[in-house]
Amino acid sequence: MTLAPSQSNTMRTVPRRRWPSAAVWVTVAVILAVHVLAWQATEFSPAALIAGWEGMADFLAESLPPDLSVLGKSLEAAVITLYIGLLGTTFSIPSALVLALLASRATTSAAWAQQAARAVLSFLRSVPDVVFALIFVTAVGLGPFAGVLALVFHNTGVMGKLWAEAMDESDRGPRDALRVTGASGPQIALHAVLPTVLPSLAGLLLYRLDVNVRSSLVLGLVGAGGIGFLINQSIKLFRFDEMVTHILVVLLLVVVVDQASALVRKRLGA
Amino acid sequence: MLAVRGLRKSFGGRTVLDGFDLRVEPGEFVALLGPNGSGKSTALRCVVGLETPDGGEIDVSGNAAMVFQKIHLVGRRTALDNVCSGALGRLPLRRSLFCPHDVRDEAMRCLDRVGLADRALDRCARLSGGQQQRVAIARALCQRASVILADEPVSALDPQAAVQVMELLVDLAGEGMTVVAVLHQPELARNYAHRIVEMVAQ
Ligand SMILES: Nc1ncnc2c1ncn2[C@@H]1O[C@H](COP(=O)(O)OP(=O)(O)O)[C@@H](O)[C@H]1O
Ligand SMILES: [Mg+2]
Image 1 (tube, each protein chain N blue to C red):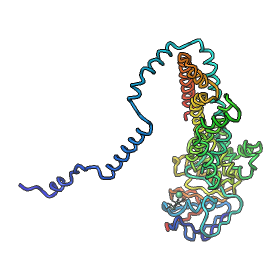
Image 2: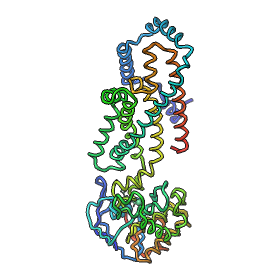
Image 3: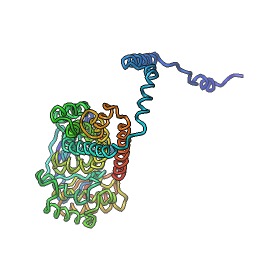
Image 4: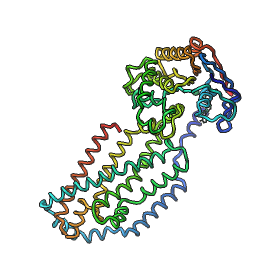
């Protein structure tokens, strides 16, 4: 019996198992090599963790039960932390808006202006808020004000970029329609782009508020006031039981802000 | 009056318009027909300045407005706000943040003209397609246009709404406006237009 030609063709076209190409092997080797280097550079050592477990056990023993006598002080400081995040967010609205309008191709046609605005945003974004805080502490001293300034600068960079992207994605049609009426660039931004993207901008603002409240905790650790500052003090004084109270309050703060901003964002539909 | 002579336009070496001529008198309604890609939209966009022609002459007496197939209103704003924005070209920036009173009055009259005065404060996203297209025409009126260029104004509308929009455009021509509409259905063109201009693909 002979196979019909079509059948033998189908037999032959059954895909054969293919071995990964050389490029895949090289990629895997490079990724492994980088991990080995990183392991060494970070002095990664499970042995050190096991050897030091006693220290950690002592620490845990000292920290429990939490010292609730500092709860009042802790809550007050948590409110300061919330305020730092709040002002850091709201005071960055004008600068983020101006830079976003300049950086977005939906609202700015001059390439040099777009590039300049994007460069400023990238710079502000790439300097961590903690670094800004350390700089401002030298100007205005330790305290919440330095934290607010730091957040305003860093958040302008992040929020400005997010806002510019939201504007970029806005539909081109309404912009064209207004251009036909003879509207100027700023008028088009005001009457076509902003009304369209406002819900997304508000959603991103709330998301940043959420992030900034958590950042202001870290800023407190470097001296910018609020509950982060209390945590730092408790650690320095070896009052781990106080520290646990502060951390519980932080947990509460983060959950409340997170839930509140999620709720508002949901209602905005953004 | 609209006069286009020898309009030329190509995109990246691909010629779309090669010497396009069109003359439309006030009071005239011209339908522009032609296969997809024959450059109908490009011709209209050149007239209103959304594309820069490579050559040719464009003469418009007065103001040219454009109406789009996809309508292009700001859906989150009210019908009245959208109509007001037709006036932006004659408002200085500092007066255009909020629509000034005189412009609002004028915009209300434009909405009334298209039969939608009662929907003035509704967000455009809540209006039907036909109503939205009439709001877009009201915006063109608020621009004080004497020439209306409509690029497939009824292609996305149901037949009833399409008839309403076509009748409105014919009426506006009857009042002395210069109207050009790209249409996809030849029978609509035969029923409503004074003259049909066929475009051919290059
Ligand atoms: N901005 C553009 N960039 C590149 N090609 C374009 C652009 N606009 C239109 N075209 C091309 O020009 C041709 C004519 O398009 P268009 O004027 O929209 O035709 P019509 O409206 O008659 O269907 C099409 O082939 C289209 O792909
Ligand atoms: Mg077209």
